[in-house]
Amino acid sequence: MQEMTDSFALTDSILFTGETFVEGQALLVKEDKILDIVSNSKIPPNFRLHPLPHSIIAPAYIDCQVNGGDNVLFNAQPTEKTALKIAAAHRKKGTTSLLPTVITDAPEVTRSAITAIRSAKKQDSSILGIHIEGPHISKLNKGVHDEKYIRELNTDDLDLYRPETKEIILLTLAPETVPPEQIRQITEQGVIVFLGHTAATPEQIRQSLKAEARGFTHLFNGMGPIASRAIGPAGTALDEEQSWASIIADNHHVAPELIRLAVKVKENLFFVSDAMAPAGTDVPAPFNLGERTITPQEDICVDENGTIAGAILTLGEIVPIAIRDIGLDPQRALQMASNLPAQFLGLDDQLGKLLPNFKADIVALDHSFNVQKVWKNGKEVV
Image 1 (cartoon, rainbow, N blue to C red):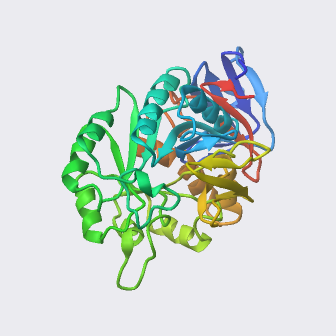
Image 2 (cartoon, rainbow, N blue to C red):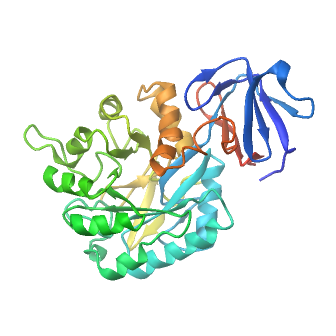
Image 3 (cartoon, helix red, strand yellow):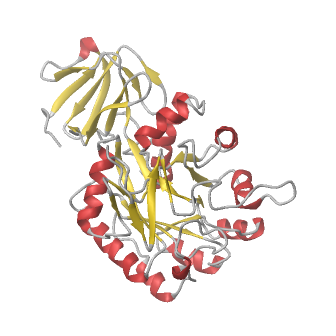
């Protein structure tokens, strides 16, 4: 990242504060924080002017499900170096806060991933913690997760899933694999529990939510269909208004009509990329996921059987698709990439808005909502 002066003003742009669009105002940044939004006539004389005509200035993006980037996969190389490389790849595309994600694998891989994140997090504040997706999921709706590693939760896992200070652990599990008593144990330790890759009944899901599970991982994917008399996990997620859910809006994982319906029904809904190794690179390369070869194909990844195996797009590329192709309101789409995940993670007092004392994590977008520039902690990312 390239250092700019400690105090600067972004001018001549439309500002999206995280709540509303504002015109004719300047965004003041001092060191790593937002100082204020003021008229041009009130910009302090010691602030460097940074005019960005024809741009939209918005809060930078927060991604709670990132498997890889820059042609490296966290599962394949669960190291500090990999985590830092993934974070850097996504940061250049507008995601300045993220949870590197390890999916179902051998216990030693999960353990290594947690250790790697704790080390990387000390060097890069973009890394908020870790998303552990599996191995306590349903074999019926496993997707590309390796069935031989899917298992019930045990006491060693309970010991492992203990967040350190200011560390986020998000754990995706299936209610039919982990009973409510264990879910409550995990949540009481400070872990955020999401339900996913599941064929659970509505009653099983509701019992999990009563045990303080917070919501659902990649809504509609790994959940089975919604039928007239069997609503499944996805239908239950829509019905449970207070629960949260993530969704992949890359025009491949979920039909646009379903995304529009979910946005109308569910306020607590935010974007994730589910990005795999090729994300954030101009030359996407095939990679191995366990014993399988995964191939980039247009904007998604598929295995040898054609099963979707994650995405290629970052949130910086998903937001314009959500607005242009899916037809979401720009304000809602920007919130689903920033303010809403910040709320979900309990970080909405410092991330997801361009307001005084918030972190200066900023994206500059063109009027098609493509990322042009990025700032992390007040420093421009190059």
